[in-house]
Amino acid sequence: MNPKVSIIMGSTSDLPIMEKAAKILDDFEIPFEINALSAHRTPDQAMDFAKGAYDRGIRVIIAGAGGAAHLPGVIAALTPVPVIGVPIKASISIDGWDSLLSIVQMPPGIPVATVGLDGAMNAGILAAQILGAGDEAVVKKVVEFKRGLETKIVKANEELKSVKFKFKTN
Ligand code: RP5
Image (cartoon, rainbow, N blue to C red; front, side, top):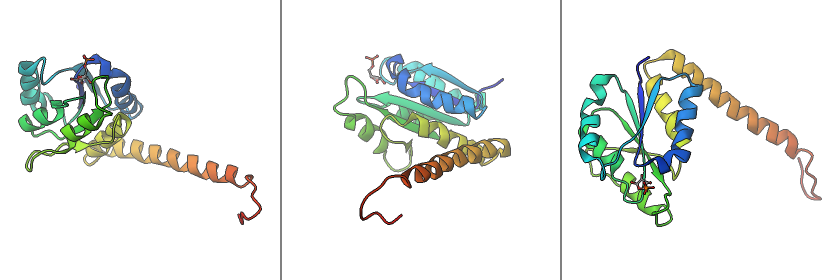
């Protein structure tokens, strides 16, 4: 089984967040790989990875990093594969703003599709939606997943019916 999505992270200290993307891809039955790779600590490997990703069949890259989070942007500069950036509130972060701004504020010409702080689950869903543009089986999984979200709110509204207030009308 060849991976279609590559999940990379600056350090395994990012794993508790990044595994949420892995869980989604697993649920959607999308083959993926997961590795630690650092723009600062392993710059040569990061460059080799980015340059070879498309030819290895990778069609979406999910890159998470915390602090001075340069990994997603550096990878995006070196590959035509779409990169989804996950800003991580790491132990070195200043409240996560450093990670978020490092990833989202890319210069014109090198987009990184940035999800919210610690938003690895959304990154996994977005990766599936990107792949879904050319894969009906994946679209079916996404639609099923979204139906599950709807069920949750329908149930919540049923429960809200029993909440009583003097001036509540429903
Ligand atoms: C970043 O530095 C990593 O993505 C991680 O979020 C942060 C801290 O890394 P460790 O010192 O925990 O390895 O490059």
